[in-house]
Image 1 (cartoon, rainbow, N blue to C red):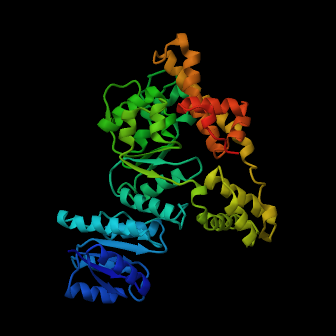
Image 2 (spheres, rainbow, N blue to C red):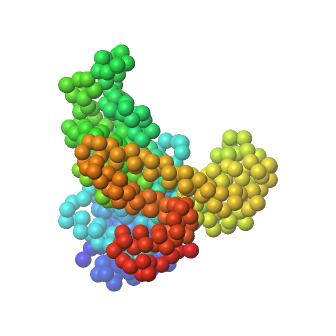
Image 3 (cartoon, rainbow, N blue to C red):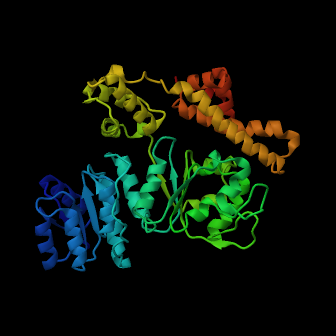
Length: 475
C-alpha cells in the first residue's frame, strides 16, 4: 500500500483528496504548508506526494527543489490553480512526476497517482532540466485545454524527439514551436522556421538543401541551405503537408541519416538539428489524401501536441484580449481598457480565425476606441472576417491541385482519368476546409461552394456511405 503525502493549505482540498485516495487503497497523510511537509518527509518519507504550488511561507516549487537537493527522489505531482507555461517548465525542471491543475477531474487524479505509484518499481528519477525562459511572445491560457498544452511542451522540450504540432490556422503553432526550442537543449542554437509552400517551387530543393557552385544556371557560388543553417538548433516545418512530394522523399533521408547533400554535390554533410513540424488538419487525413507521406509522418510525429481552437477555450478570451490590448497600448494606442460588455461579446463569438482573428479584432477596436474604453460598437461585426472564407479556400485548393497534378505528371496518377481522379481527391479536402471555416454550417458551406444544399448533402452522404436523407443539415 503506497503512502501518499498531500500538501495543500486548503483544508477542503486535503480532505477531498484524502477521501478519494483512501477509497483507492492508499495510506494518506496531509500537510498544510511546505515547512510541515519537509519535516514530515524527514521523519517518515512517503512513497509519493501531491504538492500545491501556492503555499504560505515556502512555495511548492521551492519545496520540490529542496526535496531533490536532499536526495528524496519519490514521485512528486505538482498541483496548481494558476498554471502557465513557465510553471509547467519549472515543475519539470525540478523533477516533478506530473502536473495537475485545479479544479480536478477526480478520475484523472486517480490515474496520475496510480502511474506515480507504479513508477516506484521502475525507480523513476527526476526529469532533465530545460534552460530558463526568455521574454517575448508566448502562449497564453488559464483553462484546462491550455494547461495540457503547457504540460506537454514542458515534457517534450528537453528531449531530442521530433514534435508534431496539430492545430487550426491561427491557434499559435509557431509560438508553441518557439517555446519548445526556448526550453530545449538547443536553445542557444538557431530557430529556423520553414514554410515550403511559400518558396519558389523550382528552387525548393536549393533553398532547403543548399547548392554547389555551377549546380544550375545562376548558381555562381556555394550556398548552404536552410537545414544547414539550423545546425545545432531547431528546424520548424510550418504546414508540413505543403512540402512537395519529391522533397518529402529527400527530407525523409535527411531525418534518418542526419546529413544533408547539397544540390550538385555527392558527398553528404553531417548536420544536427531538432525537428518540429506543424499541420493544420488531422495528420491521418493528410496521409489518406496523399499530401503527407506516412513514413515521413512517423519521423515527424515522435511526440504530438494538439492546440485547441479558440472556440474550445472561450474562458481564455478575456486574458488574451487584455494582453493584445496591452500590446496595442505599448505600440501607441490610447485605449484605456475593455468593458465588461465588450468582453462578453468577444466570448460569444465563434472565432473561425482563432487567436489571430481575435488579436486583429482587439487591435482594430483599440483604434476606434480613441482614448476610451473598448465597447461592443468598436468591435468588427460578427463574421466580418468570414467574407474571406471563399478566397482562403480557393488558395488552399489551388495549392492542392498543383501538388496532385504534379503527381499525375510523374505517373502516380494515370493521365487517362486525371480529371475524374482529381475530382475525387479534391472534393474531400475541399468540403473539409469549407465546413471547418463555416463551423459545420452546411447552408453556408453550400453558398461558398456554389452548390445547392441538397447537392452538398448528397455528396457528403456518398463519402460517408449513408443515404442523403440520413444526413442532417446544420443551419
